[in-house]
Image (cartoon, rainbow, N blue to C red; front, side):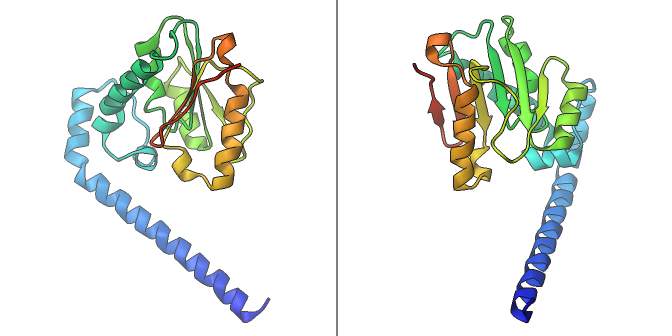
Length: 206
């Protein structure tokens, strides 16, 4: 190993450690800044199950009101958007990149109509929390590789919120191909795939 190569590796390690420290500082700062607001939320909604602070922070913002109530509004908006393209009755719906369930946890209540709900994510802690606290949804732990356990043409609707922004260009295409694989065609009643914030829409066709 040359000295230049060794120095490059050491520099990369130092940078990663520095980024970790910055992230930890930001997390603690948000925790302190939102402490009173979050304590008020817990007193107002004592029965609402909440993930750990770090899981909320990783997936969105360390704000209980935004995690739960604002996400419920997003779920309602998403329901109305999907209904423009298909009737939400007896459908299989997948939240791709569900994180700690901030959207999918509201879907059974808001959609109902004998639909079945699924979530998948690469974060093991998020999936473990979701399985324990969101009983009306089936959860799957996926890897970073674009490979999901369901057979072709499984889902009527698939949505993902701010997922593609975290993927490389190659992974964009790999995951898009995999999602199309498990999405039913329109001829079989499939509604489509929706991804935010890039507004990628795939409405399955023959």
